[in-house]
Amino acid sequence: DIQMTQSPSTLSASVGDRVTITCRASQSISSWLAWYQQKPGKAPKLLIYKASSLESGVPARFSGSGSGTEFTLTISSLQPDDFATYYCQQCHSYSLTFGGGTKVEIK
Amino acid sequence: EVQLLESGGGLVQPGGSLRLSCAASGFTFSSHAMSWVRQAPGEGLEWVSAIGSGGSSTHYADSVKGRFTISRDNSKTTLYLQMDSLRAEDTAVYYCAKWGSGTYFDYWGQGTLVTVSS
Image 1 (cartoon, rainbow over the protein chains, first blue to last red):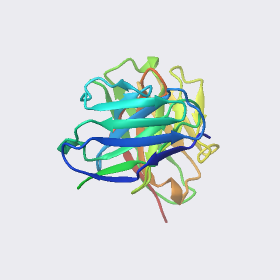
Image 2 (cartoon, one colour):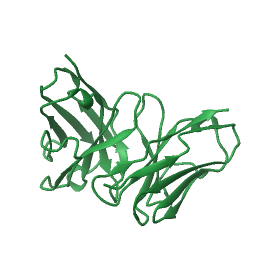
Image 3 (tube, each protein chain N blue to C red):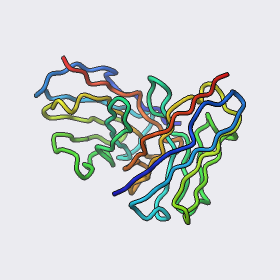
């Protein structure tokens, strides 16, 4: 199975900060990567698919980049609604696997 | 509006069985693959199973292979997960999720809690 490693596991930031989360795959997954946001007690929400495609309705401050084994999710200017946990997911092959998550906390 | 509504969760003893359902609406159910994803308390997301749009193609995580069975009824626009030989480590919120244009999940249900305990 393809292992997905996210870093950092926790991130403290302030409103207005630029935030970057990294996801690494144990083998090449081309651009088959998705990013999700999850708030406590809620289902995950799709943000980015195919590494860099923004899901409809998601604010443009979210962006994704990368290919192969290294990917990033960037929030250009952190907003109060963005404090949540973020997960990457490889969409390349079964078993589909998620990263361990990055919790973005208020600094 | 896409809606996915899970049901069937609850408390079950180790070794027991449970059947989850996910009622779908707001999209052409028979045209989309579907999955189950779970989340143990305080933990991350774990993909459990997937089924193709027609129901003939199925895939499972190693952790549930041989114990769980995914199925769908396109006439009832409902997804199912039959869970047998349940273990304490199967305790989690189970989400059904609709596939987008690839093997990623563009819509999720609200989840149903399964607790395996004596």
